[in-house]
Amino acid sequence: MLVLFWALLFLTAACLLMLMPAIWGKQIYNSYRDTRTVNCPETHALVAVRFNALRAAITGLSGRPKLSLADCSRWPERAGCDQACIPDAERATPQPETRPARPLANRVAHLPALVAAGAAWVLGMAWHSEYMFRSPWAKTVGLTDQQAHDLARQLMPHLLTVGCCLLFSYGIATLLAWQGKRSLWRGLQVSVSLWLVIAAGLLVTNPLKVGPDFLKIEGGYSALAALLIGAIVGGVPRRIFLKDEE
Image (cartoon, rainbow, N blue to C red):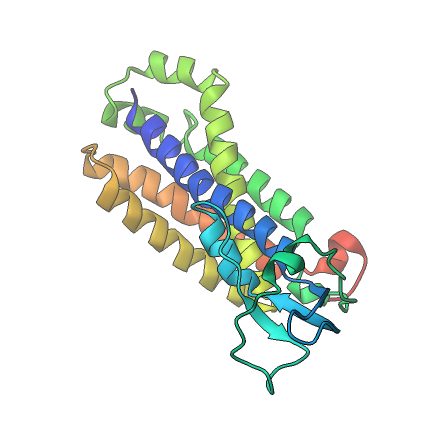
């Protein structure tokens, strides 16, 4: 198996392994974050309670969520009760709160992320073409020029590259959305930081031995692709894509 395939597969699998628990935990969190109305076992009067949704999400990743109350309308006067209403609260219908719309700066910019991923993939096509580094890259992995040419005509390498570009691009877009500010400089900072983390993780955990020439070629491409993605996701104004202001 080629070294490049292992590196791309490792990166894709690592991102997916981190993404799946995050999605599941988010779903559990959303299930328990809203307020519920129950009869208090002590007073037999209606009270409004709210679960500790974060604890439920964390414990729910390894089994049944462990429920505890984070708030009650009788608190703080009656704080420290035995929370005997939890079974009734779990069966009660949640009452979603009306939440203000998220500011545009806190939303993931999907179209810039997709454009950035596509631009990084095109850069990879040019970088590994016969006009740039295909021949020296082929030598580092023990392929002839013809074998490298045949490999470039296959679909799987391109799908893996597109997947990695999309994961990285959406990672940058999500981090910028959490920070609540998009700018060219901020996008470059976040992309370089994430690239350094991923590169260090691959070098530490990947048991495959690669030569310095391979590291130079792939490291140069991935670094330039990271900068390109950070510049597009962070620096391109939203109004160019969505006709609105930040």
